[in-house]
Length: 384
Length: 214
Image (cartoon, rainbow over all chains, first blue to last red; front, top):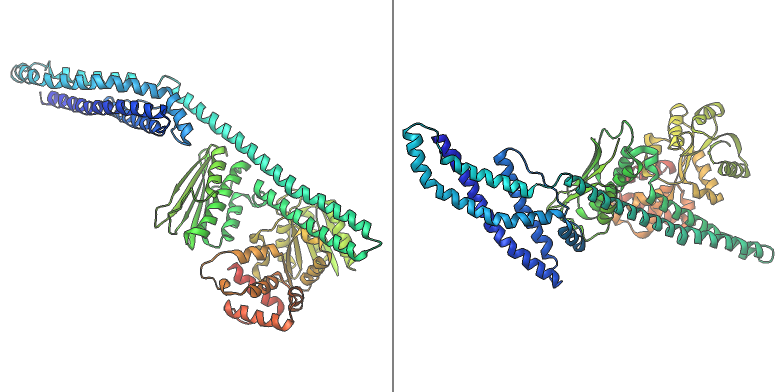
C-alpha cells in the first residue's frame, strides 16, 4: 500500500510540474505570436529567435523529465541559433524541429493541465477504495496505479511529439558540415585573393620598378655615371623591399618555422620571442605523426595571437600554453595571468582566429572575467 | 682566408662563390646538401663557413643543425648562417654557450656586397654579425618597466648597431656622429641597463645580446 501511494505521489508530482510547463506553454504561444508580429513589422526581428530558443529550453526540460521517469532519454536535434541575426532567423524558421516543438507546445497546453487535474480528482476515490480494498482486505490496489498510468501517458505523448524523426541528427550534422565547408571554401577563396593582391600590388609592382631603374641606369651609365649609381642604389632598395614583402606573404601563408621545427618547436619559438615568461607543454604533440599542415598553421596563429594580446593588453608577466594531442583532435589552450576583461569585439585579431578555426570545423572558447585570468581554448579536429 | 660554402640553390651557390672570391678569399669547398657539410668542414678546416639554414634532404633546418654540430667538433670555427627568414630562437641557439665568431643574416643581405663581406670578415675574426631584423625584434619586445624604455632614440640606435656586431668606428660612420659621442652613448646604455662596463668589442656585444635575450 505504502509503495503504491509513493509511486502515485511521484506520478502526481510529475504531472504537477507538467502542468507548470503547460502554463509556461501558454505564455510562450503569446510570445511566439508577438515575435512573429514583430518580425513581420521588421522592427523586432531579434525577438523571434530568442523565443524559439526559450521554447527549446522548455522542450529540453521536458525531454530530460521524460528521460528521468522512463529511464530512456529523448534525443535532441536542433540547428544552432548562433551567428548574425539573419542566419539565426533563418535557422529558427527553417528548422523542422521548431515546428515539432510548436506542435508539442499546443498539445502540452491541453494534456498537461487535463492529466494533472484528473490525477488530483482520482486521489479521493483512490484513498477510499484502495484504503479498503488494499489496506483492509489486503488485495492489490486498483485506483492508485491509474494515477501512474496518467503520468506514463503524459510521458509517451511528450516522447512521441518531441522525438526527432530517425536521421534528424545526421541531417543536422550534414547541415552543419555543409555550412562549415562553405565557410572554409569562402575563407580559402578570400585567402587566395589576399595573397594574389599582396603579390600583385606589392612584389610584382616592385619588381617592375626595379627592372625599370636598372634599365634607366644602363642608359645613364656612359653619360652620367653618378646618376646611374643613384639609380642602382634605388634599384637595390626596391629589390630588398620586394624580398621583405615576399617574406611577409610567406609567413602569412605558412610560417617557415613550422616546417623546420614542427608545431612544438614553432610554439616554443613564439613563446621565447613573446616578451613574457611562457610555460609551454606539448602533450604527445612532439612525437608521432604530425597534424595536417592547415591544423598546425591554425594552432600556430591561435598561440601567436593570444600571446600578442597577452603581452599587449593583459598586463601579465607570465602565460601558459598547452598543446595536447587528443583522440581525433588537437587542443590548444593559452592562459595568461593578467587583468582579464578581454573584449572580443574590440580587436580584429580574435575574429581572424575564429574564422581560421571555424574553417577547419574547430571550436574556440574565450573566457576573460574582469580580474583575469584570460583563457582561450581551441579544439581542432584532425586525424593524426 | 679559406671559406666553405653550403647552399643548395645552384644560382645562389655560384653567386656566393663569386662574391667570396672577388674579395680575394679562397673557396675551399662547397656543399649542396645537409649531410655533406660536416665531413667537408672536418676535411678542409676552413677559416669560416657560410651555411644556408634550409638544405636537402629534409628542407628543414639542416644547415643550422650542421652549424651547431660543427661547433662540437670544431669549437673555434666561425660560422655565418644565412636564411630566407630569421627566427630569434635560432639566433639564441647559435649564440648560446658563449660561442665566438657567429653570424646570422637574412639572405637578402648578400646583395649589399661590401656589408656582407664586412660581416663575413667580422665573423671570421671571432666577432658577431646579427641581422638587423633579429635585433629589431629583440628590442621591440614589450616588457613592463624595462630599462630599455628609458633609452633615448639615439641611444637605441647605437644599441641596435652594437647588437648587430658593429664596432664604434662603423657605428659613428653610419649615424654620422663622432666616435667620441658613440663611446659616450654606449656608456649611457650600459649604465641604464645596469650592465658591467666591458671594453673588449665582442664581449661587449655578447653582454648586450645576453641582456636582450634574457
